[in-house]
Amino acid sequence: MTVMNPPMHFTPAHAVERKPRVTWMTGLLMAWAALLPYQYQGAAEMISYSASDIILVLIAVLEFPNLRYRRELWSPWQYALLALFAVSTLTVAIREGSLQRYVYLNKDIGLLILFLAYAFLTSAAKNWHTIRMVMRAFVVSVVAQNIVGVLAWVASTRLGIGSPFVADNGLRLAGLMGDANAYGGLVATTLVICQGACSSGEPLFRKKFLIFARLTLAAGLLVSFSRTSWISLAIVFLFLLFTRFATAIRALFLLLCGFAVTMVVMGRQFLSLFEHLAFRPEVDTGAGRTRFDLVSSGLADFVHHPFFGIGVGSFYEQQQTIIHNSPIWFLTEFGVIGFTIFAGFLLSFALRARAAYRLAPRSEKPVVFGLILGMILMTSMSLGIEAFYQRHWWLTFALIASSYSVARRERRPRLVFPARFASSFRSAIHG
Image (cartoon, rainbow, N blue to C red; front, side, top):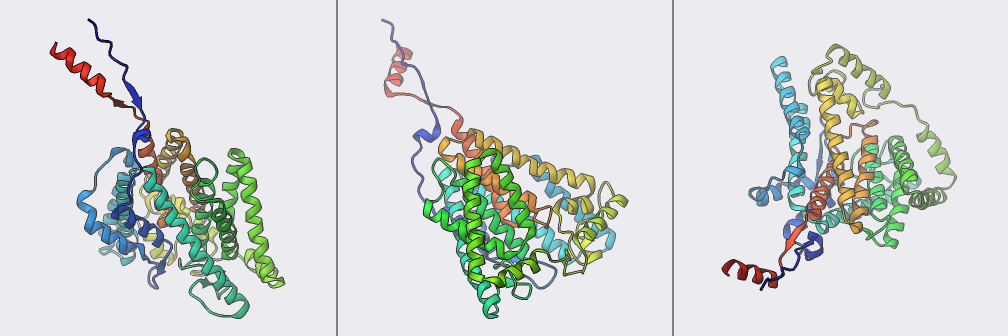
């Protein structure tokens, strides 16, 4: 008698996977993400420190032996980036006979810290639940700091009360980033991630918090008076108009409401302040030169050293300031080779983000879409500030890679053998 074997069932991993537990490692990653916006700008050589680095050290001590290499999380461009910095640092050290503290501490060790954070986050974020929790911790932390910062800015401009949250003689909101442009990029990134991740499906936050976050973040972005952030946000909205028109209109309406509330609170004084800061001359206060002058100087150095550049940290040594443009910085200090590696590095994450969105289940597509918006915004920001070392950009990189890895694993079919099929199979084998 012939035994009819039942067909094999192919079940996606996410359909049989139970909701993961919150582990101590997830808790540490959430703490790391929540502390990212809390930074201290060192007085010497433009070095910034973050409270999240303490969590990173703790994770390194406890979790380093458990790191697992997964090929889909890393690309050849990342290894090329490490090699680029190593070769350029060695070249500068041989040429100059010594190495500046700015180079090995700010550039080299700073890059290693970012890579270490990327490695830990991508190793631990193995499911959508963890990715969502890390994103929530980051967004809530930025919103909380921004509320305090906006109140501090009002107290500074209306009452003359000084605060570490404000910069440029108390006129611009800088949060705890130490720089108003960097803070504007942080707030704008949080705004678009929050907006994208709540656009449809299973939103990252409930509607009431989303409205509150939009209004307060819009106010903080406005009073940072970061024109680079404003332009970058406009580029994201332009992208949204072509992809999610209704979402863009709703978000734009609440954004304008946040601006309007700020103007009402400040009164007529705000209009004169806005005119003074929004239309201020484009001058870098550190060197008294416009950003256009700095970019022109960088391109002039590139013309003389087109292939390998002038060496890491050399522009800062010559000009005592940075270029305020990440692509031009790579072109100047690393030449065509370095610029190609930087472009390939960004492109690799753009392709992963696209693939993650295509492969992700319907309920998780908004999460990936929010990360895509965050990457678009920070890429635009990199044309106006040196954004490469911004920790929240690397957080976006890591979450994109993790989303791609999870989505790819879940779309891979998994065989499910019913007990009766296994029994029939054994009977057939043993006769």
